[in-house]
Length: 251
Ligand code: FPP
Image (cartoon, rainbow, N blue to C red; front, side, top):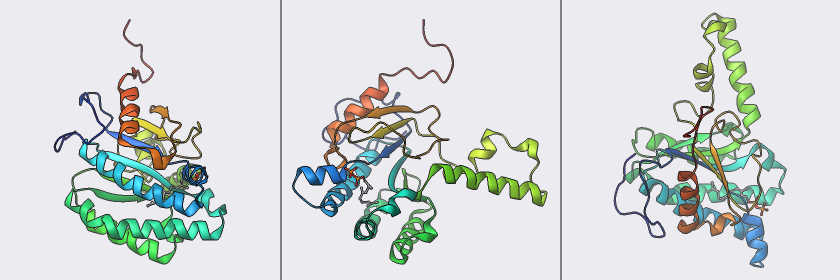
């Protein structure tokens, strides 16, 4: 873990030896935030995009190895078409506006999900951003787009079955490490900490395999209100937990 400079505002002391390497966030509550402000849902998503921008900067500044953000699930297509279009327009705007800074900060953009079904402009921007930053050695910014965890697992099983059928893989060689390499998160460590905003306490088909040993922290704050102070509180909660990975703890 690399610290690049002073801690961002809102952060007190952080014990760098206990920091998570990989944080995953279910960004929830844009709609409720907008409603509380008497605004439309698109305004909520725009505020969510601005928050995302800040959280990415902070995460890179505090030296995370990876930040995974749940931006669009396979179930989100059920939302009204104008809302879906607004979400992808915000994604395009975000990448166009921020990619140079991300690149300067050595952030490596990755996407997990079936991006071939994204609107063409969004897909183009995503591919361009990933290609530009592919060799960067700083934080991995992994955005889940058109992502569903059960599908990800089924897709991995299919890929491995195909390789067995072709004779390039022995059934006995399929172990947890081999399976993990067939997931979208290939090469990334599992998230140590999962944060979900806006009070809901469920996984919503997110990283079911990778979150096996993660610590979960839930906050009542809506995503647009997830300020540095709230992020810091979540990290502090994580650092005070004892992670045992199935073993016996200190007695
Ligand atoms: C949840 O709010 C959030 C989302 C559906 C997606 C997150 C989207 C953004 C942060 C906007 C920009 C995206 C990118 C990738 C730049 P909700 O609508 O489910 O909130 P609600 O449950 O209160 O209705």
